[in-house]
Length: 211
Image (cartoon, rainbow, N blue to C red; front, side, top):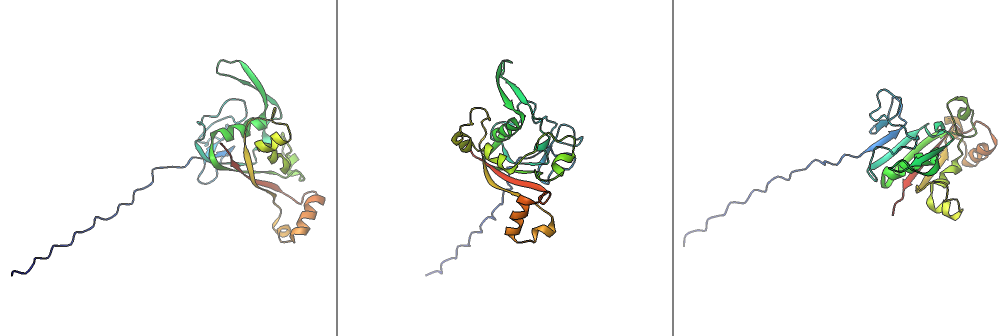
């Protein structure tokens, strides 16, 4: 009997690693001339901003609903004018009035994807930095972040005039100097309440909630 011929082993084709074609859209709102790394700058006045957009004049931002992966705004919200905006429909008919700050957060929520995070930094209320810049128009406590939560507004029966955004506060805390940061947490808490200037900025992270 003739010996059986061995069938040559089939060579497996190498696996091809396909590069992801999905590019996340991250916006640094009010970026100035130095947008956050990995984010596209959005600023009406900064000459090198990729998007020249007025963020609180009542006009819809130029991004479609639920298309933005992440947002950031550092030292911006204290500059938003303390006024009501007249919101018009597509035909130019007046629909409602909205506070400019709530318009800003409502537009950010509209363009954000569900689960997108929005990081914010602004001067601590108990610090001269909140008042020294003549272009600051608002002095903002950390507690304001609760007003951005739809459930909170409904529970307090203030949902009829504060816009339609729904941001869940993941974190919100003051920052201080490196020396103060080494102190015991209880000492820091007491100084935060008692000492003017102990806190420098407030940092918050919000999460976009959509049904």
